[in-house]
Length: 205
Image 1 (cartoon, one colour):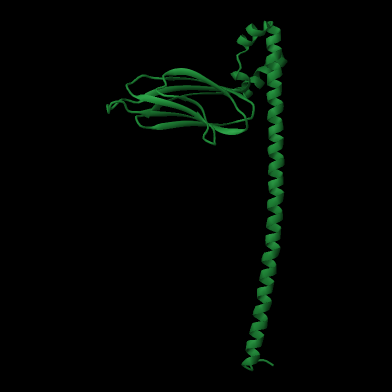
Image 2: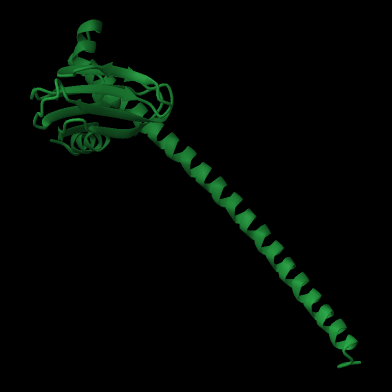
């Protein structure tokens, strides 16, 4: 394996946006997974809920409360959506009792993929009749675009943070000048007041 292939593999592994998790869901409890995702990114999810006699409802929402996917009595399935803007997305499972019977906790498996890893290049190759090399080139193109988008986002965030720091610095400086002016004014007023007071008491001339 040559050095270029090794570097490419490490780059793919570092940028692979995959979240797979297993957890137990109690009766009448709600558990959520939150993640920030960039704009125009394909997100796919696969879930499986153990059957134990209670119901588990699945909802996928954004920070504004828009329901992107919903499934009552979710057992096993997949979902997919494309983000319209940079936002915080939430995947929630809620266990609900059925018939008032106490049921044991259910094991839930959830796998989330987004970005390059969410795309099915095998299906793309079949649909567009691409050769293996062309599929790999398409994957590299998408990966390069993802890297460029990440760098652009980090640069925008850096500029935003720099503007915030400069604005904060200016406000702190003006507040410090205002505070010093207030202290000098108060000190001057105290000196004049005490001087007038002592003159009135004829303690000084």
